[in-house]
Length: 529
Image (cartoon, rainbow, N blue to C red; front, side):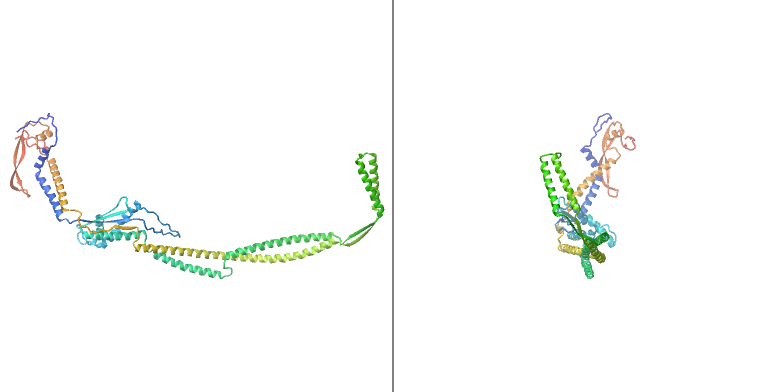
């Protein structure tokens, strides 16, 4: 059968099922070889590979135990929060996967003695532990369960008993590590040593206080100093007052000396005047009557009235007569000792005696003031020393009480650790798994699917890379030359064995003969038959 193809014909290029089947027939050798190799490998893996087991465990992180924070103060704050944050949970996950924890698990479970597939020779101990730690980390799956305080741990191994053993040791080592990290050991011993040390220092400071109290003024020197200062203030005021009295007395003595010099020794104590008492009495009576009369006239008349003026003249004459009579009598004077002079002399002697007493009192008061001042200075120095001793004793006592309290807190924490009262517990204990995680049939199914996909892909790739023409359409598309005719025929192909020699079998393959035969895409030449 022949067909004529023209480049002007409108054709739709598409890949049909027939084309795919044709590729399969053309490349069946490659498909068979690829499929057989891959499926045989999957079969060997399913038969000879050991079974894999998985063990599971879960850890619960909680906040039921609150440990006091170790601080140098008396009041240690306590961390009070019930919820476990995501950061804390991630920190516990990192702690669980730390090299320190994994190395201890490897050393305890003997994983370092188990050789790996790629190990050559006998490695040293450190290298074996390091490689076993890497294998353990790759076989562990540690995840923080979302919206919970749980940490899920999964371990895969070919030994079911080893899975449970590794996870049990991992839980034990992690809990010990968690305890060491969050509350290091040795706190009780440290606080006990410090408490004993400050106890000895407290006894020494108390003994020093007793020895100091046995000295004069050693008992409450500050209180004694205050009393001494009060007495010093009183005696200082007394001394100032005495000195003021001395100055006043000295001034008084000078004034008395002046007065004593200006006063006479004797003075007239009595003066007697002898006169006519009857006549003088008459004149005075007449004067009184005239004044009464004048007063009566003034009630009726003015002062210029003649009668009033006449009475005024009579009053003046009467006064003149009385004055003349008073000058006329004889006087008798009696003298005696001047009492003022005598009083001044007495006061002067008394002031001089008081001045001498004030001088003696001022000297004695000054001596007392000097004594109290010196005593106050000594008590001040003793008060400073006593204050230092008290502060030292108080500081040592506070430290002693602090370390006693810290020691008790550390003892309680150690007791809680020994009883296993922690913030991390094993919520699910690992048990040896009974069933393996994988099945040989699943390996075979996966190998079959993979073999089909890869063999089909290999056939398509080889067919795509083949440069020969297989259909007239390929000739027309590649060379853009009209194809006059295409005659299909079959050629006999000799079968070959694995070493490339003929095995005696025959097969028929389609070929094309016509106007264009044996053309190559790469060379672009045309041949005729």
